[in-house]
Structure formats: C-alpha cells, structure tokens
Length: 153
Image (cartoon, rainbow, N blue to C red; front, side, top):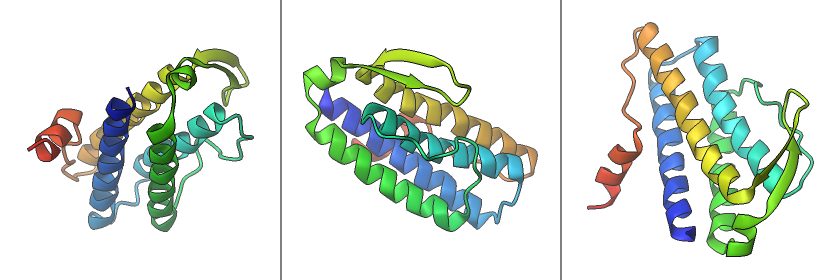
C-alpha cells in the first residue's frame, strides 16, 4: 500500500511542478487561475495537518505568490513522502475527526484522506487547465497515466 501511495504523491508533485512551470512561463496573472492552483497547494498542508492532528493555520483559498508556490510544493512533497514511507497498516485504518473550512465536522479513515488529497488536487488542476484555455494559454496534460508513461519506462 505504501508504494502505491508514494507513486501517487510523486505524480502529484510532478503535476504541481508541471502546472507551476506553465503558469510562470505564460506569466499568468489571472486571479481565478492562481487562486485555484494556490488552493491545491494549501489543501496539501491542511490535509497533512488533519491527519497529523496538528492545528491548521493555512487558509484554504489564500492566493500564493509564485515564490510561495515553489516553497509550498517542495515542503509539501517532503512532508508527504516522509510520512508515506513509514505509514503502517494501522495508521492507514485510523479514523480521524476534523472540521472543514465551513465549520462542519467529519470522521474519515486516514487512507481515504490520503487518496482524497491527490484526487482533490487533480480536480482543481483540471479547473486551472480550463481557466488557462479560457485566457488563451494552452494547458499541459497532467493526467496520471501521462505521468506513468513518462516514469514507468
């Protein structure tokens, strides 16, 4: 199980770097696009903190500068990869209780939260791709299978 999630998070890191490079190359300043991509990056820390039972000081919709995006991607990748390398079957099955940004309380097992974080990022990167297309920037394919084709050779 660990190796599967490690691969998913390597994909997530690759996809985030790929999008950030495109945003910078295109000198994108569109607020909707940057806010959605910032949301992807902020959520990585929020989910990690929920699982680790740490207080959250991240705002889910805060827009990050390009410099802060680079820092966030690098830091989140280290946190998640270190965690996933040592997670146990008992940890995957552990139930957590957390409150979302709307103030609603939920209970989920860690494994589902880990999977959700990557799926959530993929969903919002697709919104970023659509927004880029709308402003005349050709998006890059960040599909999981594209990543597999590049790395599984």
